Image (cartoon, rainbow, N blue to C red; front, side, top):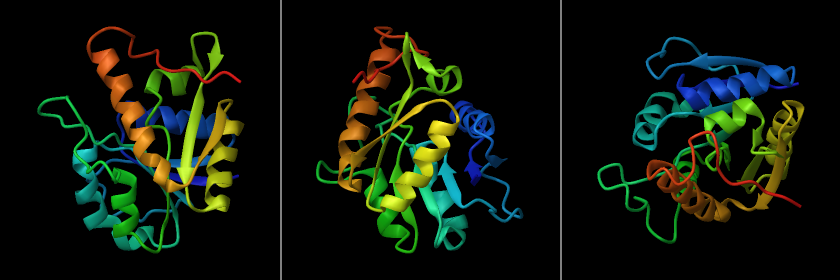
Length: 191
């Protein structure tokens, strides 16, 4: 079993904590102001808005060295909600990886809403967590947490796939914001 440190106590942080607990993993849920508490997790989930990532990395970057770091953010332009704020040839996860060369950075959970993580399904289909990253062992460790919690994990390839995951996350947010899908719905992967 894994121990997971989740930075961020919002809906996604709580949903991921519930997933970890359902799977028999231990976790700690930390808000962004909890600076005196050292991170204990082998896996650290950045369950904060994209606009808060730089601050978290500045405050906690040294602690993330050697750990699996899961970026769940969607770098959406929050002023216009009409695009991503990273260049077309990059991703938020790639930028995090560049700032944390000693960490094993993964992109995951950004294409699922909190309700789908907590509820375990999108309609009649088991919730799927798409995982991108360059470290196979790190992806396997996160996939084990996801699977133990009752969800489906799919390895979508290298960290380069984070760009497509972020675009898919943006599309899902856009559809929910315009009430074309619900915030408890989303995309389902059927095989």
